[in-house]
Length: 494
Ligand code: ADP
View 1: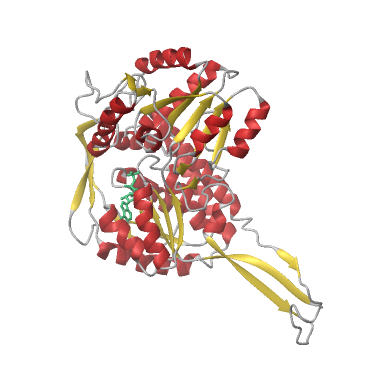
View 2 (view 1 turned 180 degrees about the horizontal axis):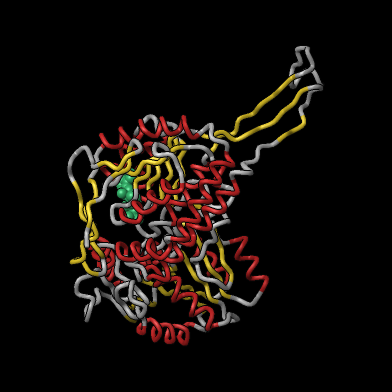
């Protein structure tokens, strides 16, 4: 059953002014057409931004607790529609239902956090250096936020951005990834149903070049939040730098799980299986490097490969499936391209190519792959593959593991398996990542903590938790001098 979908612009559901559409198909079975979506252009972006500007004027004076109350309703409706949205997300992007339910749950948790933030949005009241003078700050909304999101968390990532943007009093223009427009559509339906005014949220479907770029370049979009590849983030960063825009970037990763000889090996095996092959390896936090102490390497790898071979590929809607397809043909070609590199740089222990077999013919399936003997500094050790490919390396001393972990251009997450508290705290201090887990996999961020990475993973901002509210608001400083005389700051006191 397929359907024709629309943009949401100017408080209405409308087609693209271009009259064009694109198809959205199930990556587990491309004969399953989910729907046709507007293939929008800069003209649609222009209309959306003009509408959002009006929406902003309506929304900014709405008291923040009232904005929060609407976000609470958003959380309630997401809770009611959780299963429906999870199924739609699995159908259009492939990951297993267990994971898309988690994706929606993260959105629900983010909604409830944002709802209460409407009653905080703290400023500071600070003593003035002068007598009879008051000094304080408060947080102001900024304007229209351009929200550009990837396919891999089709519900959670938009909520990480849009909820704090709305709680702070901004309006948004949302461009979901072209591979997951249906989840984007359902999400905007929920926002409207909960009472977000029609012109406060715009949904514009289409490609990065035709919709994302004009949105980033629009002079009336002062805030841009992007999650996606480092290459696209660089292009967006250049534009925003030139135009003095506020920009949050969340990009690639090359995350390592480090296992020491004193680790709980069962736990470490469970961790790497989930971290490397969950979401078919298509997470920015995916475990793509396994650093094993040389004394445990052989036994660990043998058991790991045995378990990887048992992973069942299939349609994510079926409960027997462990690993779904890759998102599209281009992704599969990219991962396939790395297999030649893998054979040159290491030993492919299992997997190594597209998966075939019953029920897999119509989808972009790729065998879960483990490559051993990968050397630090090689392509397999440093480049983000974004697929079910795990590079195994060894180390002697923990210092060496730290060095290998740190010598890539990315810095999102890391995981260390050990029972030594000294190693655990050294990991917190010395691994160059935004997030370090001890005895837990590289994936698993919680909605109320800041999320983000160092080096080329990001540009210093964090999503989630309390920090993101600083990104979507501007500090205003207010002084009130009630002395009745001219007082000169920095001069009168000293
Ligand atoms: P991924 O590899 O995760 O798909 P991309 O960076 O290609 O990451 O895409 C992430 C999002 O960025 C998508 O919504 C995509 O349409 C959008 N995008 C791609 N290119 C551009 C661009 N030049 N400007 C703005 N957005 C873009």
